[in-house]
Length: 176
Image 1 (tube, rainbow, N blue to C red):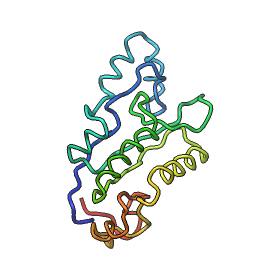
Image 2: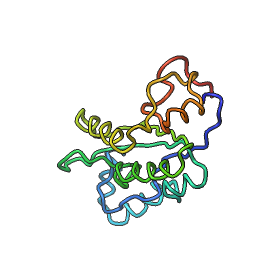
Image 3: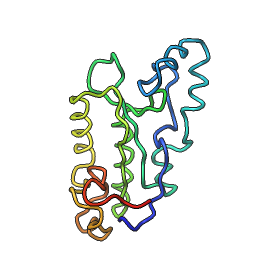
């Protein structure tokens, strides 16, 4: 896989954000304060949305690498986690279910989910995220292997379609 060019999207989930939600913890305190002024969140929504396609539409268009930023909602009871880019988006579970549905219908596709920013998350939130990833994707998850050793053929043989952890965690980093 390290020799493949993988089409991806930036802030992949940001096709929809909720302007009625609080401003996310990924923003500076000054932004969170100014967002209390009427119309500021409408402006924030315009720069928070960096994609115009849902996960399914991105997948149908060939995207296979997803840049994912997640957060709990401060003050919200429970372990729910949301996609975030200035404002909160859909729940992570809803997005993962959408991706899993695609994988179910396309058994030879491989998807990379790069959870790379975590906000307002304690250990319980991280454990919840891991449990939801395992629950939703089940046996489709790849085991820990160095990226240099993973091939599409080996994934197809094991019927694994996405990486359980960011793949280049072992061995040398991928050259860009």
